[in-house]
Image (cartoon, rainbow, N blue to C red):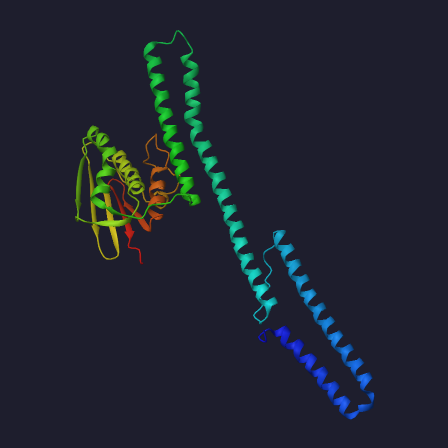
Length: 333
């Protein structure tokens, strides 16, 4: 209690008043009643002054809280002195910082949600318009059966594309908002590679592309098998798309004391230098992108790898293929 500055000051003032009264009674013993009256009055006044001062300090804190409620969080009421008021000021300041950060995070999430909705609306507009036109044409009873079958097939393709697009955008939005909980299991890299290449084997077979896999057995890292496989699938699809018929896709993996590394490369047409800095940017389409590309697969792969204490880099030159280097760093316990 005596560490409290306000209490120390108050006690010292009252002791000084009492000491003054004792000295006065020693030199003027006949004026005892007057001294008692004066001493009591001074003690009452000191108590009132102390109370008034504390009320003013509380009023300052109240005004500070009202300013915070109105959105002004720039004030600083920290007090390095001892005492319950100083402790209260510091605690209020800490809570203010927490509320400010929480408000800023909510604003960032709101912006991300708005952007996600805008992205989804923008990306589905073109296929939706195309399907509406084809649906109108299909109402024509005189339409040739071959054209009817073609339009019906195209509508199905567009619907599948829209489903993939919306699903991917929702996944990205969840990752941006931090609502996806990635598992932290020991992932065997060889099992991961098998899971990732399965969806691209048929497209590779159609283009007569060869696949070479080399790796150090027992390589592993701490992460989420399914999400990481989705990231690799998107990278492999990009390689298959940009590698010509008869081309080669190469996958290698190693592990050391610092990280587990996966390298996916191809001998395709490559990425131009001006496109490289933006290749992982959402909806970015380079000059070599296909007509059906929407620029979201590599962005998703980047977000998935980054969310698992990883890093991804790309090296490429026009006509000389592309090399994706993925590293999952060891987590220090």
